[in-house]
Length: 119
Length: 185
Image 1 (tube, rainbow over the protein chains, first blue to last red):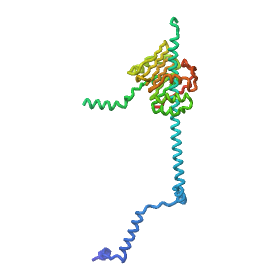
Image 2: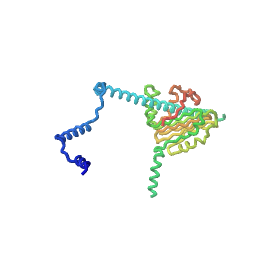
Image 3: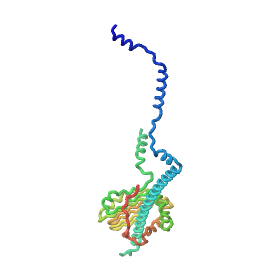
Image 4: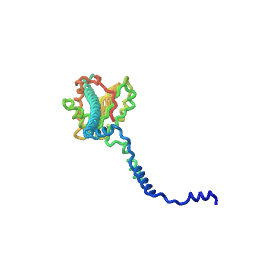
């Protein structure tokens, strides 16, 4: 047998693991799984706790909701008022033209009736 | 098979045909020739909206509000031309044809060589439920169509409101602060 074959056999020979190897592997595997499953933590900024506290505080929340409602309500009211005003202006003009033409036709008829027949 | 085709045809045409037989004024081709155009179309919802705007505090506002409350639609087209001959009497014929429908009657027709005034009303037997005016002058053409219960005496009284005292515009030539308007649809 050559020296090479001896070396190969020695290298492939079954060896018992050192004591405690299995426990260490299991322990390490468990730790890595736990790290992988845990959510990634974002680095917290300095103001984050303060802002969070303020935002979620009842006063700010109520204030923000009230302000939003006020702005929305004002916008809706203004839009509605503008539409009503525009419709009123158009209705006003339409009725005015209708009335004017009605009176004009009536005046024509009255004028014709008032004309002497021999004229 | 024929029945199915008929139903299919009705389904296709249903959105095109208006449910109520409202008068279609048309005349859009005249807008390009006109110096000034007033084109107002207000449906029931818009009239209700307009009625809210009139406070009712003044007697005139109250009259206008009451008048609008019973109306379902108003359409007004008014064209003012720079010169004569920009429209033909025949342009009004499609409208006249619609006003021959059952329920409509011509209560006034005044024709001179250059001017024409025609008033049509629709009645349900007890009250006027529709009203139309065709007024053709040499340089002005006006078509008014009002759908809904209306008292013509109340309407005539409104001729003097909106800042114009009665009698200022008896011949239709008074100053009108006419907005160039395209009506909301």
